[in-house]
Amino acid sequence: MAAHRDRRRAIPGVDRLLARPWCRLLVESHGRAWVTARLRAVLEEIRTDRIPLPASEDGFEELLRREIARAGTPSLRSAVNATGVILHTNLGRAPLAAEARAAMARAAAYGNVEFDLETGRRGSRYVHCAGLVTELTGAEAALVVNNGAGAVALALTAFAAGKGVAVSHGELVEIGGGFRIPEVVEAAGARLVTVGTTNRTRPADYARAIGGGGVAAILKVHRSNFSMAGFTEETGLAELVALGAETGVPVIHDLGSGLLADSAELGLPAEPTPAGSVAAGVDLVAFSGDKLLGGPQAGILAGTRAGVGRARAHPLCRALRCDKVTLAGLEATLALYRDPGRARARIPVLRMIAARAEELGSRAGRVAEGVAERRAARGAAPLAADVVQGESLVGGGTFPDARLPTAVLRIRAGDEAEAWMAELRAHDPPVVARSREGRILIDLRAVAPEEEAALVSALAVLGRTGAEAP
Ligand SMILES: *Cc1c(COP(=O)(O)O)cnc(C)c1O
Image 1 (tube, rainbow, N blue to C red):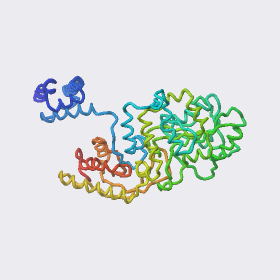
Image 2 (cartoon, rainbow, N blue to C red):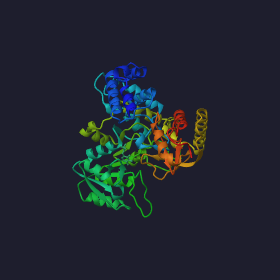
Image 3 (spheres, rainbow, N blue to C red):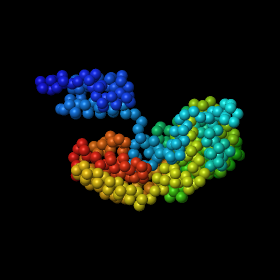
Image 4 (tube, rainbow, N blue to C red):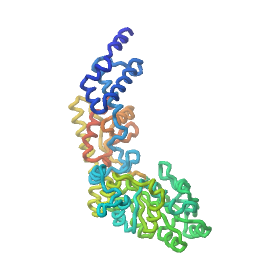
């Protein structure tokens, strides 16, 4: 006890610590005042026994260095997605194409966001990307806002605030993250007019609802995150558009995941597309920028000149406008779609969807070999690992029934599974994987080739804090 007190008395003062080389490096990146305050805080925690005092001088300095470096780590970090879920909403949905990343870095400076370079006068933010969206969807006009939910809310507000919106009972869906169609309609200041039943909604049901009066818009919602089978009937877009034309009620389509590529080329089941909605004649179709499109977070409205003009003129549009960096990333991503083959080769989401199980299996095997070599060189026990068949998911609330055959690196972890998952997350960069029944599953589907080295590093030191593989 007395020895412990003596050691605590021997703790060097803040001034002496600030002179150490590791501390000078921290001061260079975070500033002297901040590092001093952090040092004081950690020393106080040691003095009051909230952090145990390491036995050696080296251990003591390493503890301080680690604690302060951790406090200085940014909150938002990039991570390796080894879950096999491509559009992992919690991990930021779509990773962007190199072209999009470069355009976003350029746009981070000054640019002609709202400036007309020809006339030298004020320009409009809304012209950017609009031409590409109309070119790729066949729509007359387009508008880009902050996200898909914003695009739907804006369309409903502009068309139906204070009036009724007709929606099929079977399409009153929850997308996730609290986005529920009845609540969105309410938030838009509109009244929900439900049509038909959960499993069957016919054109006559819509006609009856409109006949009741006060309906200012028909909203069709793509059931993107679940499927319905059995005794079902759904009214198609073409029928709704015909009914809308007859009754003078505009049709808004909430499509969710704007796939601009050919789903068959990607090996996926057929999926409705923005171009399909436009061809069917809807007034507005809303879709996300960061789902199957593979771009940055954005919401896109495409449709008639009158429909888009009405949304753009609404004051809510200003509150939902997206920034120059997003516009640059979206424009660069959309430009890749001018050549479908180039889009499939360059847009990570499309490349990941199309990747074959054999290719993923050989990548997993290469990672396993790299890990085995590194562990042998360190004198660490080898991992009990093999490559087995598995399934990846598209994610992001899309293709709920599509299972993409994959090959995963399966690591036997036993009771250590949760501890090892935590070690992977604590790695720099963090690695996020799946674990099931004492096994850690590493799926290379959503791992970029240039991230493989980081994955090998993380797996090479796995188990350093606990028992070796069972
Ligand atoms: C995902 C989705 C949305 C919301 O789009 P965000 O870009 O996530 O805001 C809206 N509607 C449908 C049908 C969706 O699938």
